[in-house]
Image 1 (cartoon, helix red, strand yellow):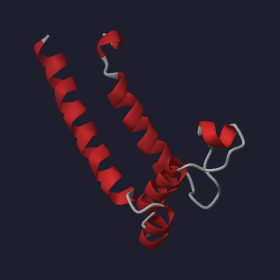
Image 2 (spheres, helix red, strand yellow; image 1 turned 90 degrees about the vertical axis):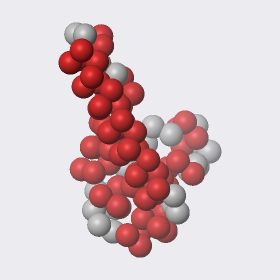
Image 3 (cartoon, one colour; image 1 turned 120 degrees about the vertical axis):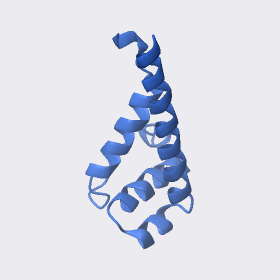
Length: 94
């Protein structure tokens, strides 16, 4: 049964949960290859901070970190909903 669980669903869900519980002002842990290589921040780094600010109700800070934070969050929530629906039907009808 564990092999039928959609890994994309798990990854997006855990990623958003992590961003929701981390304090965006404390500095988020980084998995950014650009940062790890010492090249500085990439646009994706600001996107993660932007989404974290949204979860904490800090709209202006979110906008300042990345302009696409809110649209990306909405698309990810839509994608999680779609994957959840597909997962439900997979478990129910197989």
